[in-house]
Image 1 (cartoon, protein in one colour):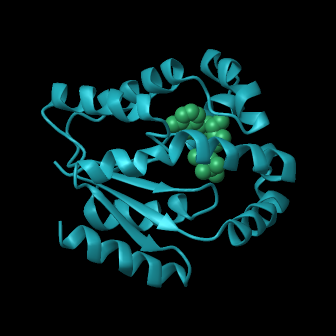
Image 2 (cartoon, rainbow, N blue to C red; image 1 turned 45 degrees about the horizontal axis):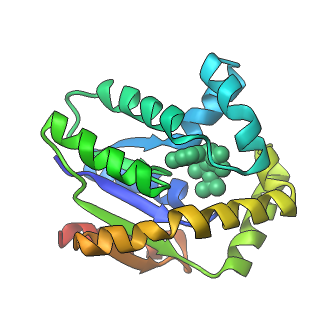
Amino acid sequence: MINIVLFGKPGAGKGTQAEFLKEKYKLTHLSTGDIFRFNLKNDTDLGKKARTFMDNGELVPCEITTAMLIDEVNKHPDTQGFLFDGYPRTLDQAKALDQFLPTIGSSVTATIALEADDEILVARLLERGKTSGRVDDQDEEKIRVRYQEYNEKTAPLIGYYKEQNKFYAVNGIGTIEEITERLTSVIDNL
Ligand SMILES: Nc1ncnc2c1ncn2[C@@H]1O[C@H](COP(=O)(O)OP(=O)(O)O)[C@@H](O)[C@H]1O
């Protein structure tokens, strides 16, 4: 089983690249953002709990997110591996994943970051907000909160995975194909 964590700031292109990678490597793509949005749209109990945090650009509390992620993983007992997109986003989540995966006989294989400058990313998000209908993409203030969340809570994961020799970074600026190429060359050499 191969488990890849796709890592990057909001707007870095994780979702776009995940679409290609999941096909190429036959991985189960788990995007916590997409799962939350599905629950919001269907107004489930989980959606009700997550809505205020998401709409404000804040992270949803760890217990809620981790329980949801474990549920999703357990729905795919026969998969060849997972492509985690948007999880883990805090040290607690990374530790939770490192505790959980061994219970299904597995572990994180590699974490790959898509890197890009903040100005480029904010412009991308505002552009996406014009058509995506995502409340959190339409307002610069909320985007700013997401970057603050990233810097405070998610960036420390880089050190966490570097210590385990599992951290790889690729340049996230270029055409979609160029970036897919960079990612596949990392994965093919794992
Ligand atoms: N691992 C997570 N932990 C906590 N909250 C999360 C997590 N993943 C997604 N969310 C919530 O969903 C929102 C949207 O997630 P996502 O689509 O991955 O965002 P982005 O475009 O900012 O990378 C986040 O701002 C947060 O509220």
